[in-house]
Length: 500
Image (cartoon, rainbow, N blue to C red):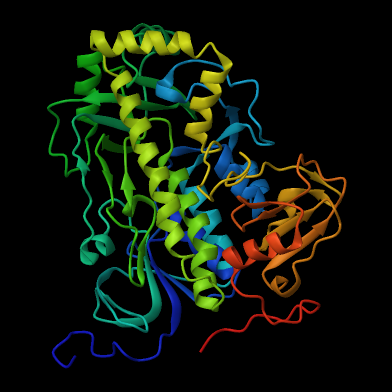
């Protein structure tokens, strides 16, 4: 070790987890870990939060997660509700009639606002956030990870999680492959003012939008417009686009540049589709765009990353707190990587349906007809909004492995009981107990709960881990997901202690 730049690699970890990246994924993960008293440091290479205001959408499942942690009201105050329809390939169909959620809408909200609210949530829970801290190297051993920063400082933690985006330094240093397809098409996106009347814009957008779904100008407030236009032959992809790039592409597509001026921000995106070969190597893990990238059609990217963090947080905390079953942390990749694969596939399909070529347009017309069937429309919306996910927990009722919608319980609403990030036994029989797992699983005996099953066990991420009414069967599943009971005496509920 003397020749290694990591001279202090074997000193005791100061942190339990270091997170690289303080975007929505990193901030949500930090908050989830702090719910379990895990010592967290978030390193963000940028010195200031993003300043440009890009509106993104929180889909149904993400809204449910925010409700589970008591964050939804803060989001609603700063966002705008929109109908939960028209997501798949921008095919204009209304929201299905049978979406099973108390939050069946899209919430449009500025991305900087989401990031600020999640970072505030994490810091209020005790997470440390350090800006201007770029990770340039790390080395892991049996006890932890030594992380090196750009200024040469070395920090020690038990785990490292890369939430540092599509060009993830952590993933590259880890040597994890990122196979997939490079961008074939490119699109310009920005916010700016225009120099022509709204009527002229509406008519032209309506005309072009019949065949070109990658083009729009939409009023954004205060005289500004959101502008999206296909790009070809523009300046170097490594450089931000210019206003002249927008003017050129608008003239090519629409025959006019609409007199665009005074841009607030300008960006570009491609349709590259890539998935990390592994989500974990030893004590280093990947989440969010560091693990997967795909075209933004359907608005799933930010949501997918936040949901990664929600799945990983309690499992990594359990590992650190010493009660995780041996394979629990492995279920992060086993559950989330197939979800990302599905998102990559549905965005590939949507991008094909955006093509102006005759073949894809014919398929688009056919799918538009099929979406008149509520079952088809619901299936596609559940896929985009992530409420159709079912993790493989083995044989059992269809509800097993699925998320449980918010429902009425005697104390109010179910999600209000999940703010602490613990498991929950929802017991309609009033005969069961969580016994020695009471330090990590809550118990609600409620014969009036709005369920079609006698009892169920919820994981901290709101997915159903067990259904039944037999105590021994319940104990077996408590052990599967929450480890050994704190002590043999099931009548007591001791507090978990930090290992070693």
